[in-house]
Image (cartoon, rainbow, N blue to C red; front, side, top):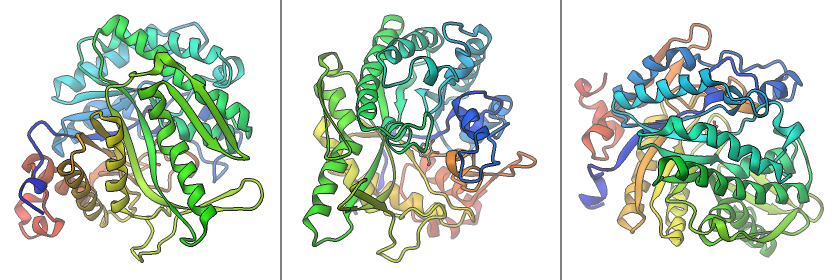
Length: 438
Ligand code: IFM
């Protein structure tokens, strides 16, 4: 590695990421209903007060500043803002405005997601994503949010991981609204692309120039059997559908998905062409795909073929795939933001090494011409992990879920050293200078 490949430029952003439902607490939405219906892995689990970020936001901004972050990703909770269809809660809008202003005053650039998995309880009953009414519903919600973003110079994300919402909620039936229906999935996908365009129009009308994108969950897919041509075909089609179809639509205006027997679509959406300023990448792992001769035709596995040990949630720790994914984004010719990357490490000892090896990939990709502008670690704090509930721990800070006390994990000192020093160092180098570790 040359010196340049070890150095982050001054304008490279280090930040942290969260989402409203996972941290704020006290939210009534479709996920709260899903929990009461016993649909989580452990059917009695509730998100409830989450980690009380709604009340402890000042403390949490301080924790982010303390690890050298200069950006903080949050999401706005649609259910707080529009608890009944067409009724917008002024106090909730004010509260978000106040929080974002405080964030900025602390030197943290707001990164604001408008939709991070959750919906108001009326949404799936009245305007679900597979109906055109969803686009108008999202437009109205974003119109209400736009004024609170004025003057913040925020990085804006319309939709977080739309393919996860669609595959989990419309194709597999595991997430709200619980459909398992290929044509509905494709109709919902097209409407989500249109919803992004509608959001853009509303934001531009109030803010003028925007820096807007989506956050895409991107997996490094690989064939389960290297010798099987149908596993290779599954990887080609699956990777395009999962990793690229959405961004491709936002860049070219053409939506194309081909998943034979499962879900396919082709649509021209000219207004979507050129509708994002950056590519948002959420990277966690590599997945092995195997063709099956009967429905659902595809099997998906995390494997530990390199013997590194899976992470605690059972995902492969595969930084090389992060580099591959970043290089793949070059096709869009746009700046790239890593809007999430992180590890469920319940003991806290692996995370500094995870960070080191993943940041190494960011530097390598930059050296190869990928315009990566920032890296947001998922997550600042341990939090509520959807179907998995309270088991996983992705946080730079460990949270005691009884007392809600936040305590630094060893990764805090490492993240701070790299973010402040702008140089990639090995975790061992930090351990050798105990004064650097707080
Ligand atoms: O916790 C989630 C987040 O909400 C979306 N991206 C993946 C994270 C870890 O599973």
